[in-house]
Length: 355
Ligand code: ADP
Ligand code: MG
Image 1 (cartoon, protein in one colour):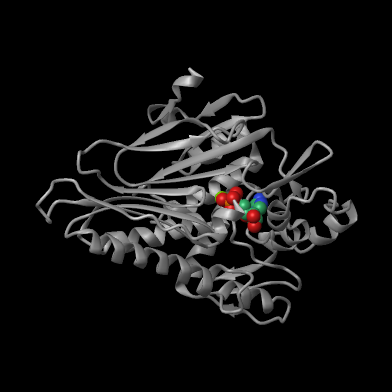
Image 2 (cartoon, helix red, strand yellow):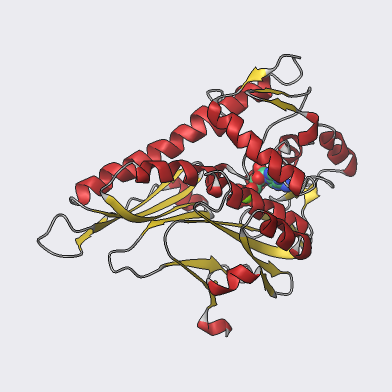
């Protein structure tokens, strides 16, 4: 993963779908890095590949802006950083329209999931620091936090302990917002607006790490095919989603960022009730939400928040939660069994090798 992140790969493939006619869409593809992950863009655009390049640059700027101005907990330019720095000062921090809306949606998922998704998990996520260990891969040096350390950090976790009012938030001393579980999905909501603002774009597939947006249509009118990674063998796809039009797809898996020690896999999705990597018996969860499914124009955010929440909850409660939000879900459990919402069955096709 790191080698990909270090090298910003830029592949441009532009070819005329219908030669000699610049009004017909061409496909423009670009791979890049932003938000600490890989961004892949496939854009069908009329007016030539120059338009594709300009739009893809706008997409990357939009993602970078979201990270540096709003979401990053590392960069002092971001709103989340400044809110975290204000924790415990007794003053309410003013929220931008965007962050106010995001936190309002996050609070709904927090409540509906009984705290399985918790946007104040920052202190305990920082204690584990799985992101760094997953990059370093030095299990000998990795010592899991003690129960005392975990319960110490958990004292600063609990979205119900922060006060969220219209346009303001107040964080108690030591509490840290962590929007890592929704950043990529939210990025897709914002990218959708960039695409919708350019009439030259007839279709696109944009992936931000494990979250994917399908938009518009292909020139030949066929469905978008989105591969779902087999969590038991990440070099293979488990199957494919066949989707028409605008969809937001997010996967949370124990294979994404982890370190293994003494036969235990310590991954990056934490159960906020225990303060430890979630252990609900699932390896991965994929959530899909379509445009206009009644979840406030933030379907990307919801797909991402719900994939994290469902991973923590496990199959039974996770299926119920997804249905409550009008989303479709696919779980792979520890025995590699697949569980889906009824509605998912029409979209998901197992790979041939798995049949
Ligand atoms: P990814 O970031 O790999 O797509 P997720 O969307 O599931 O995976 O988000 C995981 C990130 O979210 C973690 O790195 C951490 O910052 C944060 N996080 C971990 N557990 C939770 C949780 N239960 N609720 C909310 N955020 C979480
Ligand atoms: Mg998520």
